[in-house]
Length: 339
Image (cartoon, rainbow, N blue to C red; front, side, top):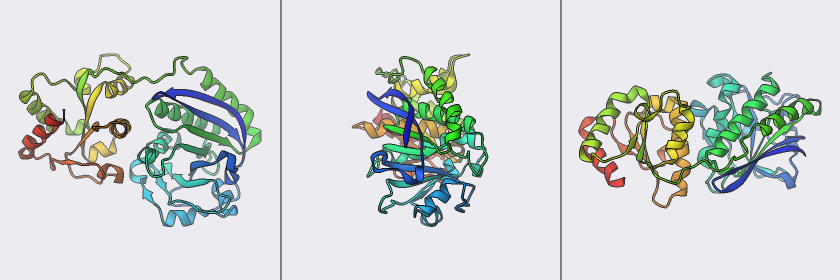
């Protein structure tokens, strides 16, 4: 594979990179080995066509269909992807495969961030995922615009790296050499538009005791719990988005900054929480901090019964189902003790 250009980002005190290559992902050389290869597919369709990466992998001895039949983790309901088991084959220089099936939940450009959301739980696994490679997703047999998809991929990669995702290198690989000129120009413009001070944005001062991550559909129950906590501890500093957001502010950036300025994150899990991209993003950002912290950051509360992704179920959950106020006294006491 040939390196064309790269964007360097400093996050969490470490330099990370997004690199643009031209080459054949089905024949990754040992010197470019990665932990994870990302492919895209139509829902439940792993036919190895001659023009697809899935077809090229089949020719190289890696069957995506066989990997799909024995998935390690299926996250398609939550983030459009599934993860394969470990691949142990001679001359195959990626350890696992992540398959992106965007049409399950929406259009590819809108959902490309799901690729990174799906990787979050495994970044610090055993072994951890630190380097990933992918084509310009959905730009082959799925007929998405390569230019549009590359722009979406760069935006999503920058977003997650700046939030502290512990991936050291993301390789975006163009197979068709005739397309590299146009795509290299798009990549170069994205690099030029990156703020000069692209350093770790995390604040070091805890302005709040806790960030309350919740779905607006659960507001009544959340308000009740917050009211109990503040009655017990009037000086408690909680970040609740509708109370703290400044009118006209860049709300998303303000949310991300607030997550880093809170000592703890209370996540109130429910079906509407799991269905919300924003809520899951808040949870995943908190999870980065939780895993890097000696005393933990995340305080998840099971507010209403929901089908949780495996990585959420692995955390210790306080049980308040089904928004049962008789349980709120114990929940309130436990949360205040942790704060």
